[in-house]
Amino acid sequence: MDRASERVGGLASEMTAERAEAARWFHALRDRIVAAFEALEDRAGGTAPAGRFEVTPTARAGDGGGGIMSVMRGGRVFEKVGVNWSEVHGTLAPRAQAAMAARGVPGMAEDPRFWASGISLVAHMQNPHAPAVHMNTRMFWTPGAWWFGGGSDLNPCLEYAEDTRHFHDTLRAACLPHGSDYYDRFKAWADEYFFIPHRGRARGVGGIFYDDLNTADWQADFAFTRAVGEAFLPAFLPLAERRMETPFDAADRDVQLIHRGLYAEYNLVYDRGTKFGLETGHNADAVLMSLPPLAKWV
Image 1 (cartoon, rainbow, N blue to C red):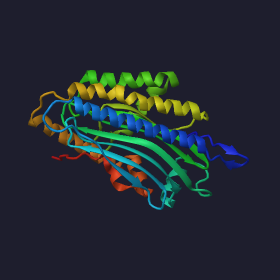
Image 2 (cartoon, rainbow, N blue to C red):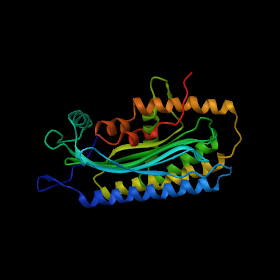
Image 3 (cartoon, one colour):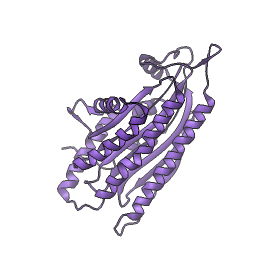
């Protein structure tokens, strides 16, 4: 994979300003999404109190930065939703160094420092007719390379074709100004990445996924990553609002819990972010925030 290195005078550029700009933007996106989800809770019917996020600072071991873990449980709309932001740094352990080197990151043996920032979101809904969803955008830096990654994918247990179409159309529109082939490429990557081999099926109806994005134009790649993040609320919020008060029964709930088991299996066995977070010493509760509150295997 092509990751252009930025080098100044034979030394890797620290990209201090770019890293700070990216981290600020990821934090601002986190704030907007948290506010939008709490506003949706206020609009939902029912006698239960509107859900609110519990916000907890997180820290990486060894004074390596940290973040904000924001989790809402037992809301009117969201059974559990987490919106995490982080900015972490340090030295990669040998196993993580080897994994990065295998992916084509240069200079790991000579200088295994890293920096990463991003936002990660997973929502599990109260109503089985409302789709679960995942979104992530991030920037990663090492002395030898930098890149962006991210994406968003929809995970309904009871699929509505019009919801799937709206989600994908919104992502397609976000991708188009940045690359005529971006949507098709990154949709195909999502279909591959979110496939569960041991079950022989995808975990949802897809979306887009990209990683290792470095066109040698940091501003352009960051602009695309911002477009992906900014498309999330228009892609997802209308679906959640449309389905949040649809009547459901015990059979619907059973389908939802079984589908959540697929989600848990994928995240524990295959997800890159889960593996990286645990291997680099980040807060385990924040890393495992994506797991559903309840699931079922039969």
